[in-house]
Length: 136
Image (cartoon, rainbow, N blue to C red; front, side, top):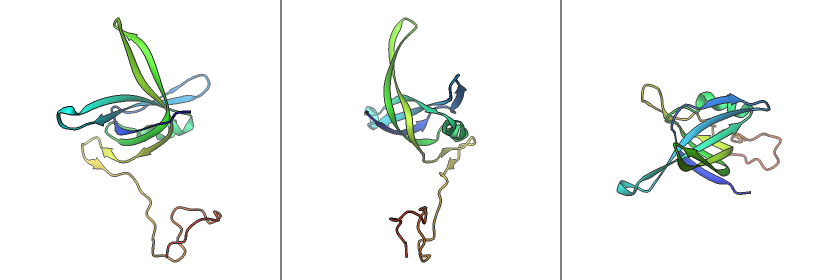
């Protein structure tokens, strides 16, 4: 199975639809390549299925920087008599890296910080995991 990894900005707020079997949250990511006069932007349609998509929908807003990993697919269709194709990704993994709020201010992503100096503090790892590292 092929996996595609992309990173970019969400173009418009995500929307969740419900099918007979499940729900799907759709959003578009603008991926920039090159720089200066050679800069191009590709738009990739993303689909996040199930409860995870429903939960994340409120955070997948216009301007948010995301990284997406998933199974790619090319969808071909006719639009106003013209043959077109678009890249789609069925999302397996997503990371949110901040973006713009509605008033235009930059919003940092939420992060969980640990006290690395605390004896025996395992950063975000469960004590039951035998290979968890201790930070001292």
